[in-house]
Length: 169
Image (tube, rainbow, N blue to C red):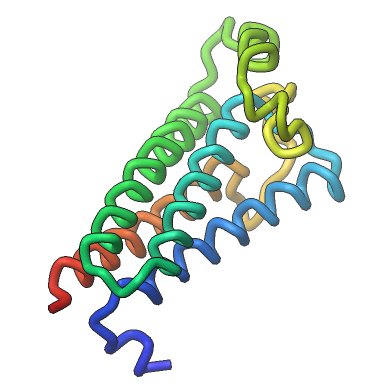
């Protein structure tokens, strides 16, 4: 295992980032289909961030050993991670300090009608749950809080991959 982390290539870190996104999506789908929790539109936007970051990281890990490909993949996956993480932070903020008149279920009607991923892959990207209703926790943390933690870990992996790709010769 030490040999993997001593390598100069960013590929193992990009692969680990892709694996983390698969685990995050697996957990989300388990909570949706096994536990019965309906995702809200903000949860779906976080899923988009996870999927994009994971796919880009996977492509970077599978790419030739080219340094430029690893740098580009790391940067693009970082952008997706920051976007999804930003939504997760905002979602966490909303659940901790709920406004009196906010609900993301019905005002996001355009999301259900016009969001192509919700049309193409409804089992993954359709959500009609209430963003402010928190009915599940693990170790005292809600789903949006766990999402923030996973995005932070993903961010750390991708920054390390970018740093490693930049130092590779």
